[in-house]
Amino acid sequence: MKTLKIIKIGGNIIDDDDALKQFLKAFATIDAPKILVHGGGKLATKLAQQMQVEVKMIDGRRVTDQVTLDIITMVYAGKINKTIVAQLQAHNCNAIGFSGADGNTIVSDLRPSKPIDYGFAGDVKKVNTETLEILLNNEITPVFCAITHDKKGQLLNTNADTIASELAIGFASIYKTELYYCFEKNGVLENVNNDNSVIENINTKSYQPLIENGIIYEGMLPKLNNCFHAVNNQVQKVCIGKSEMLFDKNNKHTTISK
Ligand SMILES: Nc1ncnc2c1ncn2[C@@H]1O[C@H](COP(=O)(O)OP(=O)(O)O)[C@@H](O)[C@H]1O
Ligand SMILES: CC(=O)N[C@@H](CCC(=O)OP(=O)(O)O)C(=O)O
Image 1 (cartoon, rainbow, N blue to C red):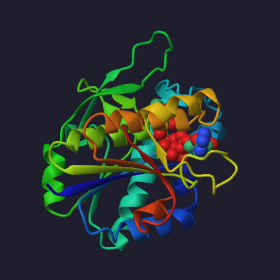
Image 2 (cartoon, rainbow, N blue to C red):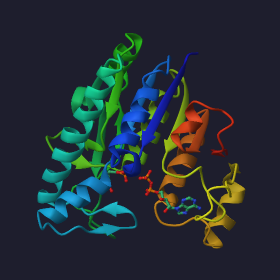
Image 3 (cartoon, helix red, strand yellow):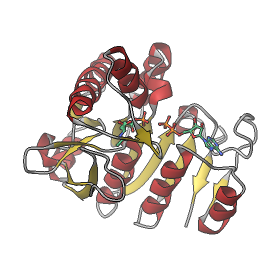
Image 4 (cartoon, rainbow, N blue to C red):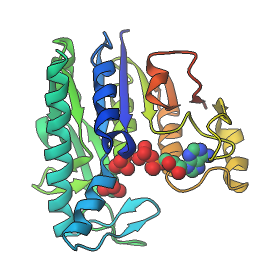
């Protein structure tokens, strides 16, 4: 079985032009099947505020009304996705940008409005790998933004960490899939202000006390839930850390296991 790397980059890489350029240059050198998933929540928030559109986040997830859906479609599927694809082309990495609607690759259900109404938010129901397999077999790299669809014509906002884990699970019977969450820190930290305090391994048993002791909170909670969802569904390897972990095995990072 071939290995497929699914790599997610968050807002702190996307927001920094130099960091993004540097990352994409290195990403383009990965000589194996790969899929890039990008967020961009910070840029969407900045733009919404500039347009005087109220930004509402609950438990790290965006409440997405119609105006917000229009903004995130322009920001995620437009500006960020196309900028990334163009930069990969400059490094001779042939790439195609995707939302879940493109090629019917990711179908979601509208999240129920109770107990919390998140508006146009989607919970992934099905990943269709066929179109993506054709591209991967031809050395073309799919680049996913954080948007899915309901197959009834409606676009839905879906957290980028979730897109990455669902893609990894969708491909797990076809490839040996590895899932990497790249963000601005060396991994899950014992002390969030000390980048040297990396917790190298987290499993289902060690996870609970880390939450209870307040060591893991906010954005790291949904990220780790996505990690466990992946390792419990045949994804072979799940890591969190700086993007350097992709190129240097000695770069400290956190590995998630069952
Ligand atoms: N123990 C921890 N170690 C590292 N980061 C943590 C921890 N607990 C909470 N966090 C927070 O989680 C954030 C990462 O989640 P998020 O902002 O959703 O990531 P992304 O940039 O990938 O979208 C970090 O910036 C940090 O503030
Ligand atoms: C439903 C939901 O919350 N969607 C996210 C999608 C973007 C994202 O996940 O971006 P980061 O990875 O950069 O945070 C949002 O709109 O903020």
